Image (spheres, rainbow, N blue to C red):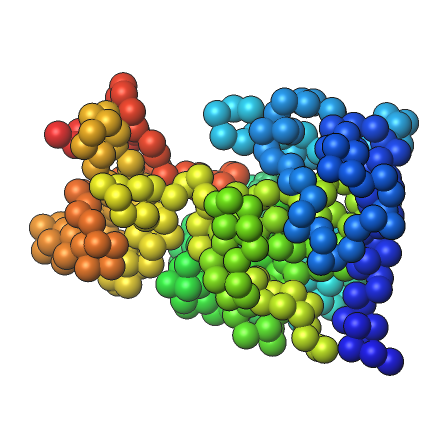
Amino acid sequence: MTAGEVLGVGLRLDRLRGLVDRLLAAGGVQGQRLRDCGVTGGGDVDLVSLRRLPTIGKRDLWDHYPYGLRAVDADDVVCVHGSSGTGGRPTLVPYTARDLEIWAEVVARALAGAGVTSRSVVHNAYGYGLFTGGLGIHHGAVRLGATVVPLSGGMTERQVRLIQDLRPDVLTCTPSYAIHLGEALGGAPNSLRVGLFGAEPWTEEMRVQIEGLLGIRALDIYGLSEVIGPGVACEALDSGGLLNIADDHFYPECVDAEGEPVPDGTPGELVFTTLTKTGMPLLRYRTGDVATLTPPTADAPHRMSKLLGRTDDMLVIRGVNVFPTEVEAVLLADARLSPHYLVVEDRRVPARPELRLAVETRTDIDPAPVAAALTAALRERLGVGCDVRVLPPGAIPRTDTGKAKRLARWTDGDSPLPGLTWD
Ligand code: DLL
């Protein structure tokens, strides 16, 4: 057996060629773009020349809303998922029965990598609905034969009660909700062993907090509705802090701002090609998510780092690039501060953008020394000044459903944190 066969290169190539044939046959915008660059069939492409094929982005999805990128008959669509997206413009994704199979398979794989078995009880507190978190984890847990408790988000008291009564060993939810739940459990012993957290950015410092609060291993799960939902990549117990990418279904690349490949291990924008999906297959989808990529080995698929940020939540403050996750890493290093915060990019005076941060203390203490220490630590780490407001416990609004809002762009109007004036 050659190395190529070990890595399944042949399988991926066949799937890529099949995808190109399907896109050409569907006759949509992706097929047209392929024809425009001279591709007449799957046989014209391979995994190396893939990088020269056209990309597709969120704007294309919006331009062809709601179903313009569907590549099958409406009859073959069995459900729709998506995300509300920035600026209220939803992104909708049609799934076929085959897509649901693939989704269950990749999520089951992710759960198995975290040690979940058919004997496990999975407390699933990702939101159920259009959002892919709840149902995606659900499909995967059912596929594994585990018992899934479909809590969805919110009603924290009921969640606490069911954790105590049903004794789940696995928790799945956003990392911010894991902290919220951990605080609500109040340090009481619980049966949880491992958690799969994702759907929003979180840092190593947040991992330490979650693991401490809940007494579990906290693993990172990544995905996006356009590609399938959770399960595109996931950390395993033994993957050394990297996320295994399900690259037999979602072939990854990592590119710079011009779309050129970056060297292995260099941060860049993740681009995925859905090799097997049928409802809304995507060739070279630019995710806007920034991470590093590690090539496959004989024992491991492509792996990605934890997300470092997004190309579009990157703040540029007086020429300095700042990802909100860097701010989080600094503030979580101070045990006096809670993990609830809001980063504000204040561009009310366009020529004088300001970085601002509202945080809260864990307990009622004098905020002044905390603010001074945090301001100094942020300047040191980010290389740019940050106006810090340290508020009492509970001052930052919580989200107990959906994703935490940790970044606000302020160009005019009222303060993004009601009641807090910054001037
Ligand atoms: O958030 C899918 C998902 C659900 C992933 C549950 C993990 C767990 P969307 O709502 O389409 O899908 O949002 C996708 O969320 O492009 C990233 O910017 C961000 N994101 C997802 N997972 C992570 C993660 C789901 N582990 C967008 N770390 C993506 C950081 C993440 N950001």
